[in-house]
Image 1 (spheres, rainbow, N blue to C red):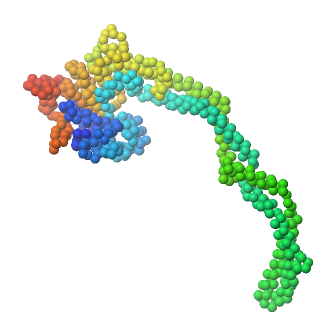
Image 2 (cartoon, helix red, strand yellow):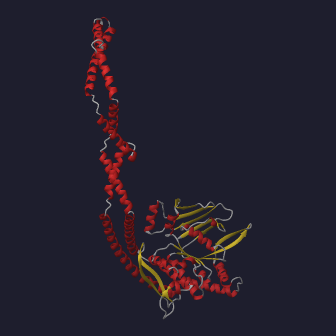
Length: 556
């Protein structure tokens, strides 16, 4: 239930604070006074789209805030947990702020929420029925949704099972479709990856190989220089006439004769002695290297070819051997996972047939549940229509099989006949405006009993009716008010008289600006307002008596 409503700088409303109670509340006043503006404000709290046109002229922003009783549905509690919104028994505060820049901010209990999530919350708070909603009945594509909204928890579970299966089926169907569409390009990619895998695999690369080959090539390329350098060094240290080794050996022997005389001499002697043996080792190593040296021009060619292969692979697949090997592992895994073959497609199509059979079974189950529900709805609507002076009306839900959709494979259309002996025909073709209003009201009466709606707003739903039908509509809205809070904008005195409370909306001009004012009427004020609704501008004693009679009858 909507407990309180605060509006600031919204259209022609400067500042307004309203309190609401349970039962039926009528909102009355002259056309253009701002009754529908209040409903527009409430619809914003339910997640309707905003517009800067709502902002009062000269203001930078507008605000709408509502305090609602906490809905008791388990689904609402789950939604609050999902959105991380804290709730308590005090109620739920919903706020919309709209800036002149077009920026809109929605808050629930102080937490900012998206407009989509506000709509999800709003469906538990308020249901607004206006003249445009009557048009919903004039579009057969809306009838399936209206029928399903009559469903109880077991029906909704059946529908969710179907929708889950439909989603799974659609996902696989799209996969098969994409598989077929991309078959040629997929095969081309597999061919390319296979070639790349073979090319890299045949190269048999190893980490560090390139560095070793470059070092070997450097040696092979500089073979003569290495031979000359080693030979010269060997000759310089071993020549019989000018042997550097013999000379250093003689120096070492001479230094040993004075080593015992001084510590410094001993150190010099030791160093020269060590150098002598180091040179001996060096001469041996040079001789060994000379023996090993052999110019192998074929090996040089092989090394160059190998390095050129690595260079080509680096140009194609990466900046280093390590990068190439990582790419090799990647494409090998992709080839392993791809498994593109006729067998793969056959498996997918076989799985799709299984899912389609399951979907068909669930769709039939959903249709059967809908038909059983439709019979109950037909009976309930005919009962309600009798109370609305359509006692000869027959209402039927017609089914037609269509393609699979998110809601099943049913197409539903409401049929009606209002005259005895006349065949059932589509509602959209035979019902008048007043009859459409009564059918919608019948639906809303039924839903208010079965769905636990918190607040239902009727925006001039009584348009196009009068007399005893208007009285019947008033009775129905009053009955809805027993199960849910009912707020009703009306121009009919019969409806206003039936309400538990009556709010009067009027315009006044202050400082050259138009303002909307709202006040709850006392018993005497209600009599005067209903008399005005009956007579127009000129109110007579008889009109006042008639108004009093309407209120007295309503109390009874």
